[in-house]
Image (cartoon, rainbow, N blue to C red; front, side):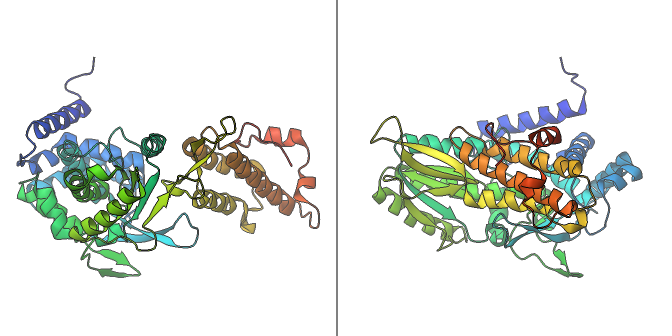
Length: 434
């Protein structure tokens, strides 16, 4: 039996009570939340979450390790004191860029300092239960006990149930265009504590440090902020609620954060859903990307669509002529992304001094993580293709390391026992050297 005085249990009890209260009273607006965010046990739990996620330093340069050296209790006491005396002020986030899955463009991230991340995590602990009570079942992104795999399964099940017309929705630069005033209005439907609303506004408008200068944040929520996924879900829940009230008869929605598809029973329903989505996004001060939002027909198997890294398509069944089944496999973009990661580990000449075992040790976590998400019955061919690419990159690395130019890398690494001893992780159970 859990100790009732344990801080984590107290925080969970608080969350449970907030959730039940919000569930019982859909119109209730909650006050006195600021004091709960400032609770020492809530801040301690928030620190544990931030520490577990690690992450880079903000503009102050302070890392997780440096906070631990400084003293976690000391930092939390200072943060609490700033809160209760209304002296807390966030600093601008540090802008960094990470490669997108297409391998060409980059995604901007805003990294708050550690102290701001801790307070954002504390706010999320208190606020998330209130909004979880309202969120709809077809919303899967960044929610407790929900996952991208569940969203993928929901899409597959809907197609198998006969929804063979799909609307792919791409919201143009969603995280950069969220309207601050509308977002805070949506939060205020559940939160009446003005100090909490002020805290959220401070995070939204803290600014961004990029190339030595700070620019103001006039719109959007920073990708990289701990509170940002919750705020994004609050904003897009307004779209979910509009769908339930106005257009649920047109099909089934599956949404993961700003990735959304509507699965319909006919082309007419899909066209109507497409028009409705464009209009509804306008009401929320958002826009559908005209080139990436489309209606896809799955009936004849000539077309498919991508969602959360998977490609969905209706393909002929070998054992039942004339029938089709829904197949999923890693999208071209997902395969390109993992190849880019593999190449980044094996390609640089500056790494040729490293033993090949160290290269394999870096590759294996990449392959395990990718396989855990994408490996499914029926996509063994795609797994084997990635396996072959990994072995080719390792063989090329060894060939360069041994300076065996003009010789096939497979000749350099042709001994199967050598490969077996290397411990390279295989995505496919039928992986063979070629």
